[in-house]
Image (cartoon, rainbow, N blue to C red; front, side, top):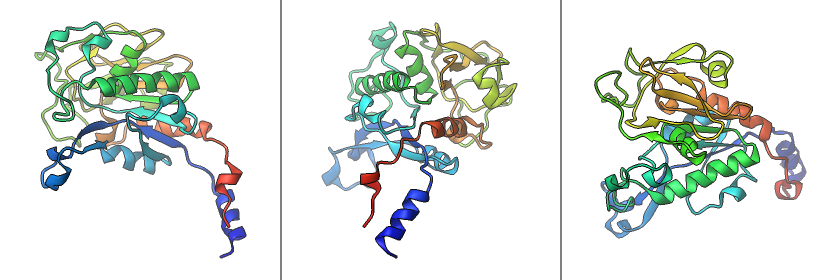
Length: 272
């Protein structure tokens, strides 16, 4: 096939939205079976469920390392997903810093990671400034909230609806974990009146950040969905990447990001 023909095929193929995914950083030595020579080297990761579901929804997933400059990333990305993980450091929302463990996050991915907090809060600001569709998942919802000046409940009660599940990851959640959404909101347009969801969190939104509103709650009043009216910014407290029945969140961010696909660079795309 000639270079001209290949170039024509490239030009005719519609571009898919590039969706950035945040993740964790840890030492290779934590991976069972890894070569000991790699023990102190660091690796970045995200759950591949995000990548597979974004791909099926028509997007192109890409990992966002902490070393990247968020403003530069947003010149290329069409959408952003802030994923789940460890608690946000309490210094970001006025919480009790005495609970912070003096352990390097690279040695224990479950402890607070200030480097991740710094990158993800900057990523939220950059995405909002650029007008890019933004989805916050579990911790990501909380990152969105604290970035805008909100606070968190440090520990939810354990005697009511169970928000920290003990079952395996692929689940639609316990029968009593039903989220109801406010009519006329972005969340309602994506999820409908109500949705049974999985749940792996012990913290939640307390006071909302600037202009952020709660648009979905469980029966105990816990905030399960937040959004910025007038913007493509949505946070969900559950894990859409692990729902047995897709809830529509990842499909939404890909669909919204399709309006932000960057134009082709003819010089870069030219073949032959």
